[in-house]
Image (tube, rainbow, N blue to C red; front, side, top):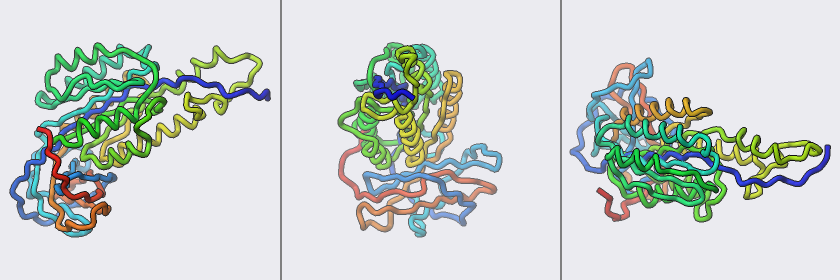
Length: 351
């Protein structure tokens, strides 16, 4: 095999959709909890910035269908085995604030129109009073709209997006979490559509954005779009026929082997979803993307929100386990499994 120097290429990124839905912090009078039903703990970690711990919950029957119209007194919450008083409850009819992040880097160039159509269709599938924050990024990050329920404004902003170079995924997520959502009230969610490979972020990292997402009481839905073959095929015409091509020779603009970069991206997007109670999706075609957006919109319409003030108000930074039970026959509960206690900071919440 002929040895060849690494091939550097400016790795494109895709559409990151971040959809942030609000979880209202208005406290209600606590109600006594009845006998517990079936418990099915799930898979996420939440770090809150106030003493009110908010927990998104889905309740499904044995066929995986959402169970609607449950009441507050049908739920139990336990922290480290100690039952807590439910101080806050919102049923599935309450609105979300959704942050939708679109990765508009070079890899979206030939599919941008279809991606725009899928994103616009997603917005239309949300409820009329759901609000959307639209963010687009390539090397730069642009907040295209503040939280709004005006579908015309959102659709027009989506249609105006144009592809550019570089991918500042970590920076985009960091800005959305810290500037747009961290002090917002109500149900919150982030939806990311991207290949997951960051090439140009400077102020945020893989680790720092995972931590920031854990600290936010919002669901994160990640949609990974396959640009691996696009990246490889874009390089092959530039390769000499005298050189044996291996993926180990192809590196990103940061010097990371392409195969390693994509493996890291896949892990990152899985972790974002896992740690926040959202869900990871893989979309290898625009048609699959449209279906995935529809599934996410449906799931956002099927979330209860519970909140409680921990009886144990000590030990800042301590990780605590959460268990949720519901008094409903044959019900399975999907919710967060733990959070990191953080006392109230006194920072006023956005309305």
